[in-house]
Image (cartoon, rainbow, N blue to C red; front, side, top):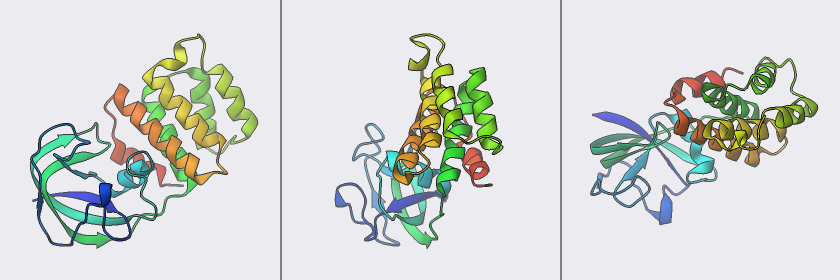
Length: 204
């Protein structure tokens, strides 16, 4: 049996108040796009789920469950996935992620796809804690785009989202949102190891 992970609200509900129960099997058609009633939505890893929650369901104070999953399968670049049959089997402790860890996740995702030298120098300095000042971040904002169109690419969107996450470290909600945006942009550009990146981000 395959395992996946599910986030719910405090009453074990998800989108449109869909009610889950522990141990009960649920089945869908396995048809249509991932964000449709044809799929039961899950994450391949608890940390990835927590990093992406602000851009997906934005569940406040979520609960985390391990699930058995089977049937038809659909995947969205590792960001989330869908199965046509599943049941929740165990509630798990919710990982606690700090704003700094979220910024690390955003930067690591962006570095996978964005190769601008000045931006990467700023990113490396931020990750190493050599320079996390606002001045360094603002300088990077204006130096990472060398042409009018260079910051409209998917890769540069990831870089911009990571930059904004780092610049607004005083706002946890905005950091979480920009972090998720960085991951979404990065995975549109290239297949990356989100699970490995998530675990690496938690090292500080």
